[in-house]
Image 1 (cartoon, rainbow, N blue to C red):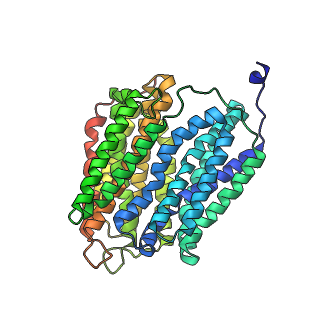
Image 2: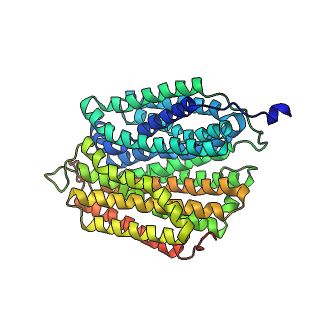
Image 3: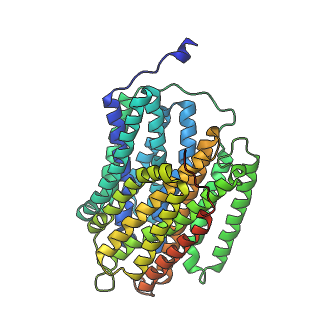
Length: 465
């Protein structure tokens, strides 16, 4: 009993600083693909659909790893799991840096996806070693540095890839990840394991969900080639149906399911998940198309932007996304979640339709992308807030994880639809899609987003008294 009640070892500024350095490094490594995607497509001879797959595979892995990492961190100690997770991330970064082709680069991105689980584990470690007031400050610092690292990676990826090579844009942040992980291992004391959960991790559900998501992405990536490979496409559809059926059956019987389908049946939950999915599909479709449009040669209808220029053009959108969380949280508390979600949907729809109508100047795309990022952040923050306050406190983690997994699936589907559109509308023998592909993509994204208003109007106001 004495050991249980003994206070944990306090950590100093050096240990928090090491976690902050790790957050900067992982944020930078996570963000290097987005501004350089057109460059990677050219160098690795990828179709737009394959480029879309590359842009989302890290996010999918992160959605699968994060809930498992948090559970293992609570059970075995946050530091122990964090160090092992970062070893996987470091291996993924090295694989990406050395990758000679797309399949190897995809493998590297899958391994790098483990970094998404690092932030929750950092919070576990901080909360166990600092009193509540100090831990809130430390968590805010680490979160802010992760966002800052993402912006630094977005700005530096282009110059590094163009000056050195695409290999170094992965290698440099990976070296920083390895160094900061060693510092964390040295400066951070071990936190004691928590109480073991008899139900354990839902490994069958995790594996089936992984198979389902991968198969879904392959189906969307192959959609433009349906006419030339109908048999392969049909086989993938059958495999996808089998994964969905098997996963549903396993989750219904699991003692501690990864995704609680019974909770998903509650009106507040399914409305939040439907809204999150639809909004993220529209957002992701546009977010994928904008860098591709920047890269279209100036002699056609684009701007011929380099990877460096694309990174600068996308930076205002990243800043807007970082501000959306606090603004959305304040708005949800003052006006209610429904008002914030509705406002976000209106802004998002207007920005998407505006991009479909006007995309002939760089500032059209910069402002459009900034408004899309802001609106998406407002919606997702309000939906997570609404979900967290609509369930019992003991179900908060499960409920919010449902929304976050739905968010990732929406992003994945939107990006793949964008890639499929560009691939289908690229004339034979050309590398430049027809301009109508971008217009069609923005219109589809705007229409899909506008339809979500039908669900948003049925939400409860969600105003906290």
